[in-house]
Length: 293
Image (tube, rainbow, N blue to C red; front, side):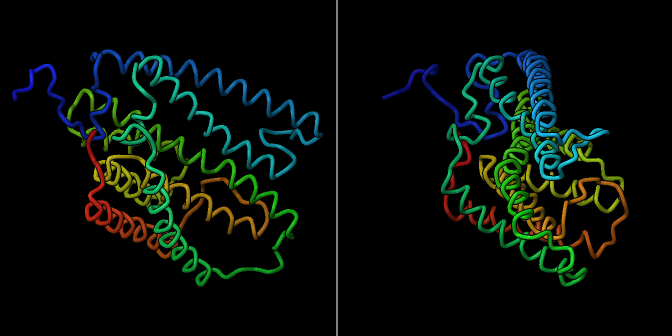
């Protein structure tokens, strides 16, 4: 029995999921415009709400920040997290496709695979943090107390995963697919989204910039090799959340991204990223994970 040509469906890899039914070359441009509008609206609403709450609570700061470090932390990561609903609505309304196509080739997050990646991310990042503790030590005198730390921990657990996921859906998800819909090859998208990802951070130290570049390329590679964002989200969330959970045991974390770093501080993280990428790619291949729709 022969299948009519219009019934044949070619399997699409992750980076080409944006070229579905109804795709037009100009559609990504309309998505950019809608995303800019939605992000502006959501950011304005979030900032107004945050400052309103801060004023009522008496923690409004004199400068850009807030008088309460826990609230300041929540605001700093929440500003990034609001990108997520803007992205999902953009893909639905302007992209004319299910938002789940940003998650994976199956049309949604593969939660069992997500959890499997998370445990290896914990191992990788945990090792890096242990190396850092050996290098720098831990000062008991800076411990803020269980009450203060619990407040930080609650914010980290609730907000940081959304912040990290938002960056992944932006760089390794939506923009990665949008650029690839024009180029067909994923490599230009890898380069351009990596440049954007690095620019979103304010680090100026060359070693950190190299580390961020390796991190971004590795997550792009994982996204292609696994057919979804799960592995990238897992490493990004664990890297940010576990690092902050440890940092807040020494008081309010310094979120400024300036300063100089040594190779001993940066290299363990770079090695962990590469090791995680190799191991998760191998596990995806051995498990026969679906990598095309």
